[in-house]
Length: 368
Ligand SMILES: Nc1ncnc2c1ncn2[C@@H]1O[C@H](COP(=O)(O)OP(=O)(O)O)[C@@H](O)[C@H]1O
Ligand SMILES: [Mg+2]
Image (cartoon, rainbow, N blue to C red; front, side, top):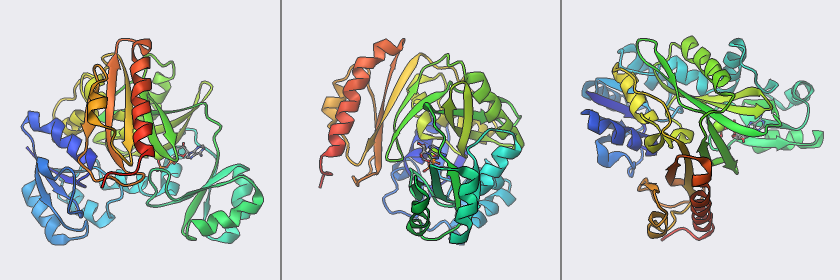
């Protein structure tokens, strides 16, 4: 089967790495010249709005999916109308717009932060009356890795926040005093079968994911699965979806969903019976889904801005290294590594060493 992917970054690359043994072939529509997935298939280098490229992809692929949600809606609609796209244009479009996304989560009775739309400076006072302080102002569109967000701690900071985001349509959210950030990754097949991986526990710095831990047996697993399934069913979803959650005691608040494979699920490549990448492709292709059980405990660490020395990394026993082949730049995700073990204790020492190497590399200037 020939799979077309909108986007050519590391998620597309890992999809191709997972699908190649299944006999799948890949074509990537991606505007950048140095798309890191390119070596694993055919790269159509064109803007997402290029209609000739759409036609080439529609001819060259039996199914089309996306590795990023910020693909223009007309592009998604083109492939949807030809019966090629999974997940649907609607599932992706809602995730592109934070207000629509929060409205859907609330309609499905998933608890969320208090929120209000902000379309002008004048809206700020009434929005703050709904959310209280502290609150986070977020652009409704194009935000990722914590970009397009401003924290408001005092009423006097509200206007500065509005200006700092460029006075574009925004959403104000109350700050959820979470103990932990979690994500549940689910997959739904064309036949409606849903499966879920064990919860990931996620630690961020400067809005970017640093560390994901899979510790199977979380007592909140069933609740998280219930919320994720509601979303998968409501969207008549096909493929992998990640739901980001805030844990407060035994409650879960939904933050946002990603209509695609997700960074917090990278541990599933080595740490689960079937990875998120393989199951996404199985779902998109209409094949039976694989088992989503964890093989044990896993820890995944992102490499941001600069790659650690691979000799030092590979010196850590059992480490699985993923270097995406991207050029170094501050704040850029360049790779990750995963450690797996039977127990959390078994992993702790090596994970500490891995984090140390990742932090040291990030502090160093990028390679020339
Ligand atoms: N309402 C909130 N309360 C507390 N923390 C939040 C809230 N919204 C976002 N954050 C923090 O900011 C991070 C990035 O925000 P998120 O909404 O997930 O945007 P992005 O699309 O950039 O991932 C979250 O993972 C969380 O750490
Ligand atoms: Mg997020």
